[in-house]
Length: 498
Image (cartoon, rainbow, N blue to C red; front, side):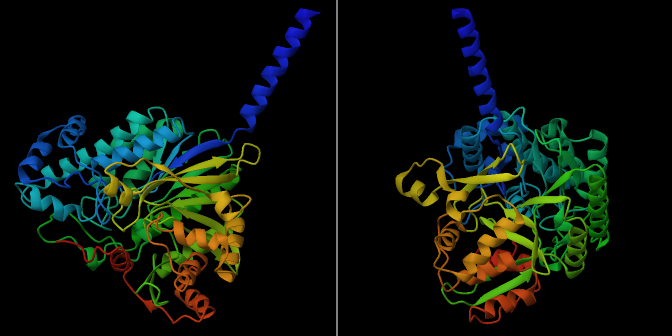
């Protein structure tokens, strides 16, 4: 009798443990826009020493400098990058996977290099490429140190290029080099041959999501769809001879065709699709003067690619699940809506880089085990103002999304309801939380300016955005043709350095 009771007790205990494991949500990390600047704070002698070291010895070099994390208005130095990765590892040691929506390299990469290097890019382009590759290898090895068995699924940002901002070359040497550096971190999520071919040509690839056999990730190089792609505003200077040419719209059209083919294949295979890209669709906007209600706005993509994209997601709305993007550095959202109906949610990740006045942050997401729908997320952040004041500061949770916004699931329909209610009630707790967390607890959006940001989330075109502002009695925004110029001005960093 005693043995039978003992066996029954053990059986019940194992059953409860198994049920608890099943009910536990899978979790994954999203880190974005590190904008690693290994040149920060170096003089020419230090830069020369760094340039001669292999990537494996860079961490020791930076640790010997004892650099503090940077202040607002600067990109991430080594200290801030590893601080963020350490905090992410401490918060979630074994994530199912990590998503990285782009921008590995610092702003004004070429100009900063030419200031410090003994030979300019024009004089020795190979030395410049070698240095850039080592910087990317350092980012890869720091991820791998902390997450050796975790697939780290990444896309490229507008700053990730030998040729400079928005000038990535399809089929060029940068795509080939980055693919070789990053492919080992993808583990078994990709077909190796397909990855090499597709990534080296367009910077796109397909990956399977660990633990989600019915889901698939399509990684897109949405920089090719940007209105700033190969624009004069960021044109490489004559001194930066990196074989940079303007391919026009051909690569963007090829990528759009690739996306449609992949969605058709996913439908045939009964797969649900996540998207990962850097530049989201829709608008970028900013307030001309705080608490003025006056704004400027620019379409992030060209009209051609926005129109084609919306047609594709309309056709494949039954396949698409969610999209993760970066680029703006803010904790934000975009919702693709067609005829007023929400189709796809883009969760814009806050940046690790504090260059636009934001605190450094990353996100932890939970997936409901029963529905396999994303159910919640938390933001972990580093208060840089407190760090400067006290000399030390720890990463901590900024907010829990479900507590702040009160949604059921992280879907386009659910988040659309949340933001529609915010727009109709600017005094609501959810609206106040969004205003506080948008810039990661630095500058809270004022009540007068809040409709500008809410209307940006809910509207993909300048015309509909303008109509939304009129509902709040605000002036028509100033239309800016160059989205890169608007983003840099919004962040307070001005025109590109030459």
